[in-house]
Amino acid sequence: MNPNLKQLHPYPFEKLAQLKKEVTAPQDKVHIALSIGEPKHTTPDLIHHALKKHSDGIAKYPTTKGIPELRTAISNWISQRFNIASSDISADNQVLPVSGTREALFSFAQAVVDSSRSDALVIMPNPFYQIYEGAALLAGATPYFINTTEQSNYLPDFDSVPDDIWQRCQLIFICSPGNPTGAVISEREQIKLINLAEKFDFIIASDECYTEIFDDEDNPPQGLLETAYNMGNTSFKRCVIFQSLSKRSNAPGLRSGFVAGDADILKSYFQYRTYQGCAQPLPTQYASIAAWQDETHVTENRVLYRQKFNAFIELLAGVCHINKPPASFYIWLKTPIDDEDFAQKLFEQQNITVLPGSYLSREAHGINPGKNHVRIALVAPVEECIEAANRIKHFINTLD
Image (cartoon, rainbow, N blue to C red; front, side, top):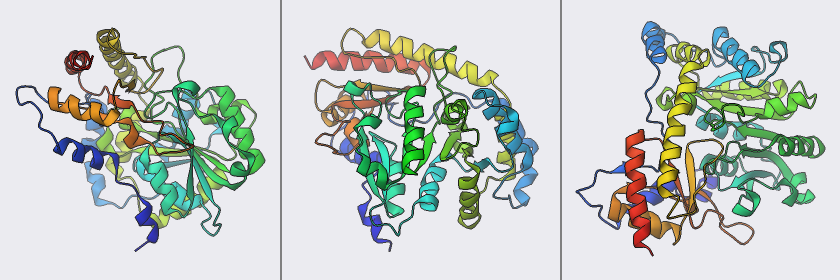
């Protein structure tokens, strides 16, 4: 077996299941799951229609690169969403469809990390999406964590990283808007990171799966390619973004996303993918085309999330310190007691499942930045989120 497997930590939801086994939830309350970032809004009809219309595509092997129509739909979306001239984002060599960004984020590290270097580092925020760490470890690299705390507005402080760490860095994962915090990395900080990548020769992998869920309709989160383009880096050197239809289009089971950016990097990554074998089935590709070409359902999706955030926060504002994040569908709530105790007792007393923040982070630089936080995913319908807020409010009041 690959010896690096022994370095993997239990996945957060395995730990959560064990935590819940120790107690019994009240049977007179319907369970409300707020722990998993799985959208519960209706998947748009246009996706269902395209899947049905092209169902005969399951009789054919899909190609790794995807059909030209899909790559064109994606490149057009990138151009329109991130203010990049259509002639400057190539559907042929700067876009690759992937079977969801989870597999892409993992496999990307396997393709780009030079494991022959024993000092190889992969930098990532802390807390973080656990795939970043697992991908780094199984690629033969060592994770280096940048703590994102309340003091840094839950954003990575790139100035805190010493030069000798940047020199060993081969890849950095960033997530903007962030999971679990919803914090958005500014253009200024993205510029700083791109300049660091140029100076120290590493790749930036920007996980942007939550960019289409944001609070201010006039101020959408800026993407890494947009920043690079504005800097004059029109070839997106060292910059790669990861996008998905899971959150944007409420289609997590479609397993459809894309990777885009530096053509030289994607050329090598494409070669890796031809051996890996993860290609989107043709019905999925046609459904994805329909989704990427439509913005109406995405705008409607944001309206629902705003309703939930406003109602949820209004109900809890009087009993705890709670802020609306600029983007994503998570609330990163500070807890008045230990986060594991909070999650366990909330389940035991109110039959609500949330995720302890310490399960999403590691001890680094003397602290665990996820401690005394829980991640709440406002993915359930509005009425269910309101019911959850009332129960959580009651629970917090019992802690006084």
